[in-house]
Length: 233
Image 1 (tube, rainbow, N blue to C red):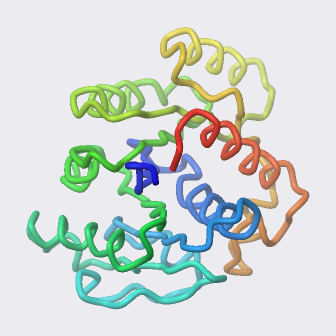
Image 2 (image 1 turned 90 degrees about the vertical axis):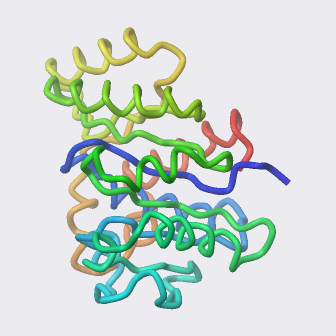
């Protein structure tokens, strides 16, 4: 069994498609990649992933049991996360891993702000792998470099995934710069801009279930093939 149990989706800013990616990755691992025990851990007090999955944020996320969403265990978020102690948050992350089978994989949706202590608590774990969702536009570089610095200090393995790619000149230039600055850490798979990612929100489904053959759903599947080929989770 791999030592990597947590796939942490981080961004360092809002509007990167992080929650859409988290939901789609969890669903694809469970339904298409044959992983029987997959959990989603919403660590953002704003509870974007929780509401995206059609669930109501909870007052005490630290102690609330998970709920089932398309065969995936969802640990819901809420404002109470902002008031929890570091020890309580660490125990909450632990239980998401340990309450499942020995082969459970946890997809963690981290808050946008890199100064949130949750990043440190997740990055300091020996069982975490970080996937940085980086929007393909020039003003993403500041937050991206901060994210890479944090992950580097913690010594965790990571990849950067370009999102919202639309093959426009500015975005292509951003992608080339990203690949140049962070050679070896940028995935070959890019997540395209796709209206299906917006449409699926109203249905409370992951885009990989709502529109299985859409560009973004196929890209998420390809992304996982790429990541799983290099890192066993």
